[in-house]
Image 1 (tube, rainbow, N blue to C red):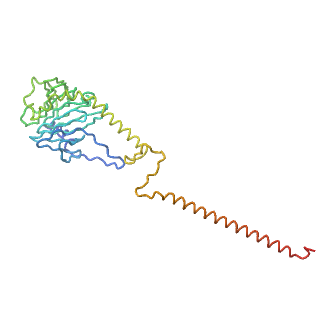
Image 2: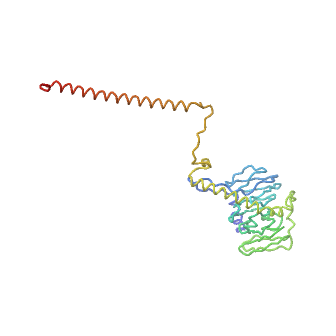
Image 3: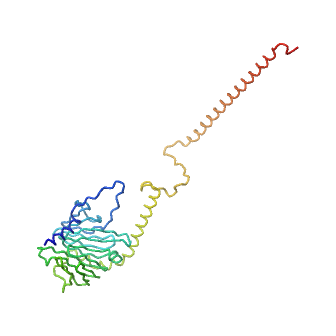
Length: 333
């Protein structure tokens, strides 16, 4: 039981415990990765943000990487995922989107932590194109997929529904239950199981356990796998283009050393005509030009008068000098 307590604590800590990260003043706040959008929310449902603070959630709201969902006995949530997949969070469940990125890239990732209860997942393009990056982690196993509609269930000791451990039922595609002691592949209409205990090995069950029961909204999943896989390639390409455009824009802004609100206009660098302010006097520029012209004329006239006075002064000086010389004795005999 000490081993079980450690497993549950290890899984629960990232889901519900608070983590303090050092603040970095010089780094901008990174854009949060959207995991999915709420399509349905009913009954007792609690959503916790990445800081482990409870927040309100309604249909149409986004759920982000790092956030957790807790449902009560009558709670249920359906999410359309960013990779076009679909997830149903069953009643009496505790789960977290530990890591999630869907940008149409090779690095796209979906890691879900499931501590208790059940989720049904119809995988999108991550499960199809990045299957090695798709995982559901429970206290006893890690579950991988191959383009799948499957349901994972975690029963805790004393819960009473069945033997404690991790169960996975496959509807379409396939999954792999893995521990450090081995792995087992689960095919459609089969279920796998990993019991509690440090030496437990994954196993295939002879039949699907009866406690895999449909919820009141199970009809939503009918045909969902086929519908999703008709469009995921198109949606993946559209998402890739969106993120490529964002990256190019950010790179341009970084090179220009300008913030998002200071982006250069398309015609930056071209000579612009000054826009005329509302209510401006249309003759103002003409009058201003005439005023400057008059100022220049006055300056020129003043310079001319100064030059004339200087010339007159020099002439008078020469005249006085000649008169003085004329009065010298013996000069005119």
